[in-house]
Image (cartoon, rainbow, N blue to C red):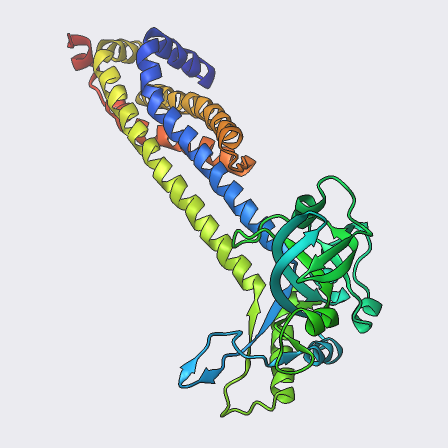
Length: 408
């Protein structure tokens, strides 16, 4: 008996008990749909996290001041004022693996424009910062080195600040007040969205670094920065750049082996790797939980196939009596089991994909359906049919023809 005949016989057997066949497939349908939907949600979450981290910029090393001790109490990282604009310039000039380095200072303040006001983060920056952050200007111009050297009172607005102060109007050329000091708006930055910590990156105003140091923040000495953001020349050079920065700053700050460094470095690529690993682990966990439904569905198929073998014992005996071999009987029942799971898998894939789309539209949660997840789900459903269909098929093939013909 060839494969085509086997398929026709299996289809006829499944059509004979349509409701039972559907109920048998239901466990597989639910399991596959759950696997597809869960993996789509997990992949969507992974994509969002990677996009948020990428919005900060690529190949970034963050240098922050160390801690201070006062009255026996130690502050956390960033508590000291140990980094300067000169450190940033030295890093960019003397570290071969570094593409850009930019010192920044940060404060908060009330931003006023006419009768509108908005509380926002104000950051002092140099032109290199926008190259590091890969943050283009959509209206006007960016901060130039002349603005920094002259400590000019000009500013760049993030999209959130621009929307709240000016609505749909173009703010370029307008005067705003930051901590009662007038600044001219020279540009508006492109939208960045949320950071990995959930903060609105567009809720910010940038001013020239020297302007911020002189007028907006209090420092113990001239040229102090609250952090230095560094961009390595490539992803492969991040660790090298980090080591070069540590070595240079240890020399500049006269840090010996017996002395604790007055700064620390953070590699944002490591944060991305950890976030991606967490997301992948969550996707695998969701997929594993959903796969339990497939195992339950497979057990259901095995039970139904055992019942089918019992019901069709006389049919098996007749087929053996007219020349069917054990392998023919085995192949027939295996084919029926695989057809049940494959059809259930196809329906489950369609339902899972549809469910992912519904979740994305109703809840606003991003979902991503990959060809890989569909292929895995389909192959897994076929494997379930083979695994759980083998025992009933072997039992059918092992029947004694004479006993099978006598069976009532």
